[in-house]
Image 1 (cartoon, helix red, strand yellow):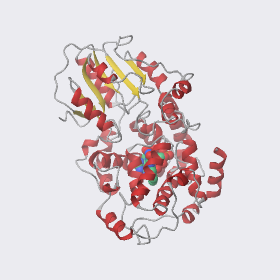
Image 2 (cartoon, helix red, strand yellow):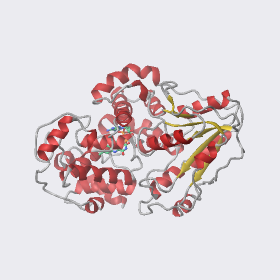
Image 3 (tube, rainbow, N blue to C red):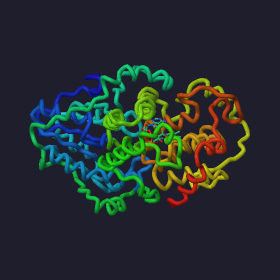
Image 4 (cartoon, rainbow, N blue to C red):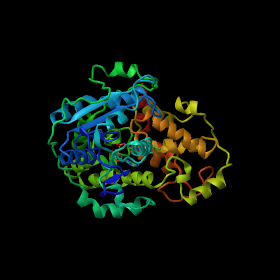
Length: 459
Ligand SMILES: Cc1cc2nc3c(=O)[nH]c(=O)nc-3n(C[C@H](O)[C@H](O)[C@H](O)COP(=O)(O)OP(=O)(O)OC[C@H]3O[C@@H](n4cnc5c(N)ncnc54)[C@H](O)[C@@H]3O)c2cc1C
């Protein structure tokens, strides 16, 4: 049942009359500011004259769980504990390290909750989490959309491409691009006793905690990106003050630090896109750079969220339009000039130095520059035995190594390489009418030698 344009009630249960608190299960919007779900939970707690408990859990067994993803998430925990305590909100963080650790923590916390509020994130493991909690909980469960600047509910179907969603976003932007006023809780929950194990995380204990988890230890923490809202804001300030003025040209130069590099902070919700968009809009940078940035942050990003919200096939080639399926059928048997295994690609062992460099950047830093990311995806299509194998390889590598992976942008970005949100181009082998890119021509548009040398220096 829809409550308003940001909130859906996922089940039809009465409020728990014997409750001790309202529960906000924070899954994806790992922040205090500009968080519609947190504000909704605070309002509910105040209405019911109850304290608010914010619960954030980190499991060991979600797909691609690794030292890299765990460390980035844990780096944002301590600052939230301090901030929530200051606000009179009880914050509980629990790291479930292995199969023997206590489970069903949300269910245990729910027993004393009047109602549950959680994040309405449209992909990866979250929709299934929300379906299950709504089915099992004996109290109302509300899912709140704090993903983008514009509520996802403002669009009632899957948009075809950027050109169809852009005019709709532009019409709504003025109304939605505003900071969210914060509301305080009336009843403090600090020190509240809860039926849930708790993990106290400090920067000194993160590596030890991560080492004890039953996760992929081969994917090392990033030495380039530190998790948390404070680290995200530091990067946002640097971006707005030093990089944004030249963003319109520098963003296509992987050899320069010319883009925001904020996607991982946006993915984990450490930063709200509203905060980022306002900082850009209100800066003194040239209008063309601000417009170019807001096109990516709002139009492109929200197109991806729209796709995962409305297309149940977002993680397969079935999400592609009919013209792509037709051209793929016609070119499925075309001879591939190179055929690399997943192991060769993962190790960055191809004949193509620029592709290897992009792969290296991702494996070492946890991100890949936007410009080479397109080329990276296109070449995997050219070098795989089938389109299906190429798609599976791209999803796996992107989601395993990238801090910003497992995101609507991950699926939309990879599908874009196959023609999603694009149009037919000139026909050629293997790609058919899907847009084609080569390292030769792409590498001429920036100093590719410098970029390759930089990625080598990272190792
Ligand atoms: C094969 C492939 C895989 C991709 N995988 C991911 C992924 O896992 N996670 C991810 O966030 N993005 C992904 N993208 C989109 C894009 O490459 C990244 O968002 C961008 O590189 C992030 O760097 P930045 O923050 O410096 O971007 P900036 O240029 O500074 O852009 C600002 C913000 O706008 C958004 N944005 C930028 N480009 C796009 C785009 N093409 N589509 C949608 N939103 C965009 C991002 O949130 C980004 O942080 C992928 C693209 C491709 C082609």
